[in-house]
Every structure is written in structure tokens, then in C-alpha cells.
Image (cartoon, rainbow, N blue to C red):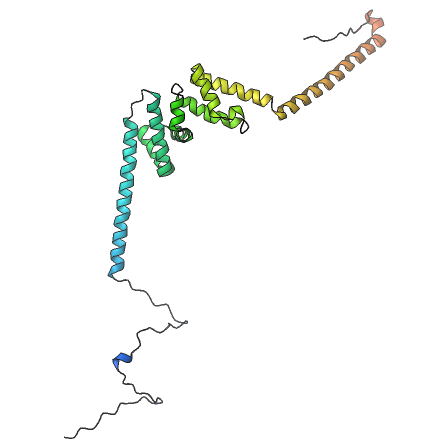
Length: 250
């Protein structure tokens, strides 16, 4: 039987054949119709593996963080406070926990140790304010006095003598201050600074001026009252009043 050659079928209105070789099929998808919905993306097995890996990594990190925080809390509780250095060690741990874990970690330390949160926060601030070299330079000064000095320096002008912690710490070391001694010295110096400040001087001068004016008015009122008495009531009282003035001596 004689075979006739196959003639490809053509679409109506088209001059191109519907039979195309596989190699000529385009591999890129056409752009979606702007009016139609956006096609959903399908995730392959690689996305699932990535999610599992991420969750495990997060779990490992969280577990490591909890273990490190627990270790620091245990070190804090294990310190037996016998010397100033032991107190500094606790303060350093409080500073490290706050720096690494923030307020949440410090609250955790407060819950586990029974110390107030504000106390631990104050310890952390003081520990960061003084280096190990500064602490060693004043071995007989307690950490509480260091904290008092830290807060005292804020009340004085920058670059002034009493704005430097070393001014206070040298005196505390030399005179063997107790915490009460340090607080009394700081309060006295702050009061003197306030009295000698320009604002305090201006206020004091204004007060003296005002009181002087009030005293002069009061004196004039007394002189007027005496004169009025002598003029109107002396004949009936059979006495006259006199006012003797003399310089005031302290």
C-alpha cells in the first residue's frame, strides 16, 4: 500500500501549523493577566527543611541563653560576702546580666536571689562606673561609699574639684569613712555649693533688701503710732512715750 505524506492540520484563520516540535516550546511563563488573581506560590520540600532547621536553631539558642543566665545566677548565689571584693563580684554579675539580658534578666535575678530590682540595677550602674583599677586604689572604701560618691558628683559643675570621684575617694580612704560619714560629708558639701552658687547669692541679696524695706516700714509705723499717742491720748494717760534708737550689734 502506498502511504501518502502526512499534511499537518492548520487552525482556521491561521497560517501556522498547530504541530510544533518539542524543542520549540518556550520555557518562560507568560505574565499573568493584571485583571486576574495572583497565582499562589507552592513551596517545595526545601522550604520545609529550612523551617525545621530554623526552629531547631532558635530552640538551641534559647536553651543556651537560659543555661547561661542560670549559670550567672548560681555564681551570684554562690558568693559568700566576707570582703569588699565579694560585694564587687556580685555587682559585676548584676551588671553583666543587665547588659546581656536587659531588664528581663535583672528581674529574673531579683526573683531568684530576693534582692530588690532597684538595688540590683544600682549595683550594675556602680560596677560599670568604676574600673577594677579604681577599686583597687581604695581598698578600704566600701562599694556603698563608691555608689554614694558616684551620685554626689552629679551635684557639682563639670571639671570642678568635687565633680571628680577621686576627690571623695581619697578622703574616704584617708579618713576611713563609714557610709554615714560619706553621706554627711556629701550633704554638707552640696549645701555649701548651693549657698555659694550665683543663684543663691542673688536670692540672698534680694531677701536682705526686702527684709530691710519691711523693717524700715515697721519702724516708721511705730514712730507714727507713738506720735499719735502723745498727741491724742497722753493727757488722759498722764504719760508720754519716747522712742530711743541705738545701733544694732550682733
